[in-house]
Image (tube, rainbow, N blue to C red; front, side, top):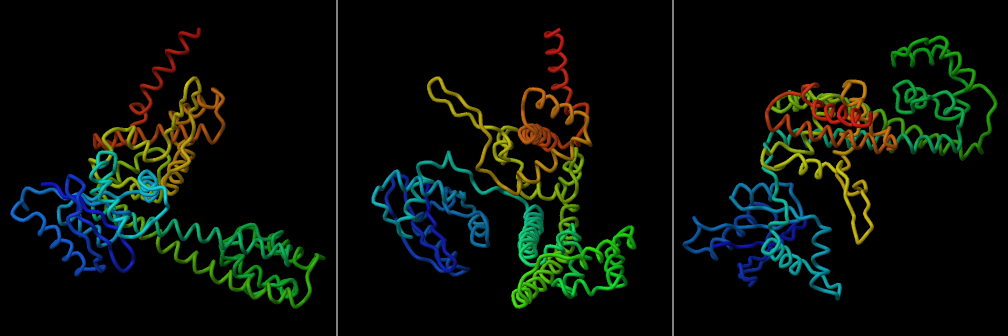
Length: 413
């Protein structure tokens, strides 16, 4: 017997519907989040199965793949499908044009989706706890870096509005010496009063080179003539700059703390050695790649599947006589960011990668397109290494491509 369960989740409750193979509703309920809710769900399913519990299969559709609730469903032996909300929206449009929506109706729709389209949906990956731990810390680390960039851009815009001299002397607004001096002197008047000793001290603590020369240049620019704003406006901006400097200082500190956690967790994973053997792959990038791909050995049956999930492979749109090959714009931003960074670093670390990139450029591809194609190729190499449990080998990785290229040159000659 097969049962299909739709689970429309919210922060405090779950609207659940149990459906049979014919699409008939067998049970419906709103369950509380937590142990009590999971227990009631198990009871609902057991009531419908009766004496066929041992031979039954339960498929669950839900719009998330994370959290204790999903983990409990997987632990119970159910097949759980994490359905993209965009897919749910499109499915809703297939069956209704009125635009009506409710939690109970969404639970019914999710159950119907796993009943009719389970072969088109991706089940929640069976990643290990070690891989999940790497994902938690690596995502948090990257999020803090993005937050630091956002706060830095806000600080840059504020300084442009009232204190342009600061932008002339401070190249890195999130650097330790910059933040220290901006906290001490967040406005033109107090900055002009900074002594060489104060500036030198900040540069020394940040371990800068050519301290005397840089300190003299900073002081000269800060004491020069610049356009300014009214005193009351400058004071208001200065207060925001002190706040931004404090936030950026904390973000810098926590980025370093989480970086050590990323390194520690990634180093304990059995796939770390293989991932680190890839060209252009460091420990932080490797952790991000492992986190986003996961380590379920059955998740990607072919290299093409992994490339499609990575978002590095192109998509083809063909209609009649028209055909276009385009880059994928819907993808996992964290994974693509890591893979493109790896590809860029691989240009220096791998002659094969450099040769492949140069060939794409020779065919007319731009820098970004060639880098994306290189990243796609490197994903395929990583897939092969993980499948065979062997580290990267430069000669093996590029032998087939080199042979094809040599053959093409011979034909052209």
